[in-house]
Length: 372
Image 1 (tube, rainbow, N blue to C red):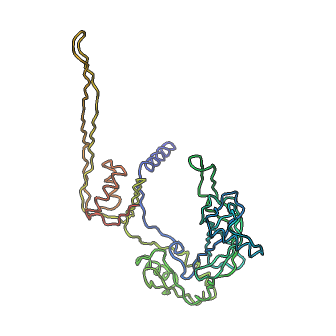
Image 2 (image 1 turned 120 degrees about the vertical axis):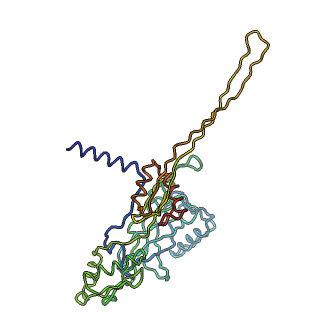
Image 3 (image 1 turned 180 degrees about the vertical axis):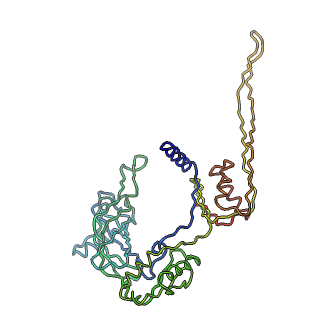
């Protein structure tokens, strides 16, 4: 029995390795994974700053914004300098970006990304000096500062003698910014009702979410549109909105998806939804192979004759046509029928991609065909 199990395991592994087909079918999932409470969102922050302490890999004196920034920074510390005489190879002008998560408070730390905007070759080993981070409304919500980690390097003097790993002009600083101002996301404002925003708008999924909530709490949910479900907070949860949202997020539903076939031509990978279907269609799959070879022949004259050596070229053409395989799919075919039929004729992943494109062009494939 143990040997049989081992053999079955090996066969299963071989089947997994020899196919490039992946089937996507809708499965039950939590509301938490397909929707979120409307209004609870992150905010993007951005700032302009300087990275100092570089080992000659910073901006050149052609970068006027870097020269100006150094002059302004030194002036703020009471030092007057002539920016035209600066050689800022140890400094780089950068853009600092961060995401302000919901419900963070003043004093919390958030991660930042630092990206060079000049001609610096690397910001590895540099230190970002204090940089205010602003939101789209122009207000400062965090201040960033700290050592920059790039996770890459550049070695050599340029040209073919240069070795590079990753992107040394972009780095990160974990917990590199301190939150100075909070974006109010108080759940007290939704004590009576709330709305769930679907990550992917769909009429069927929104309806199923509302039905699942109503089965558990009564008639408190309604699908307002394909992307939003409005929910009335029960009276006994008015003082515990967090607990109510947590209970909603833990409800399982089966989301619905549009029938789609995704094809990656570079890798030969095909992902099909389980609800893909085709009309009655006939497919013929075969190949024609033509091989032309050239040979050089030398004809020598008989000994002691007056003849000359003659060099000739001979061509040999071989034509081999593989036996065409034909299959017929009925109008009730689904994704399993498609795969089984294509595998039965020995179609390779590349062949299957071409066949699917042809089926779609004929109008027999009832699914979106997306090529990436």
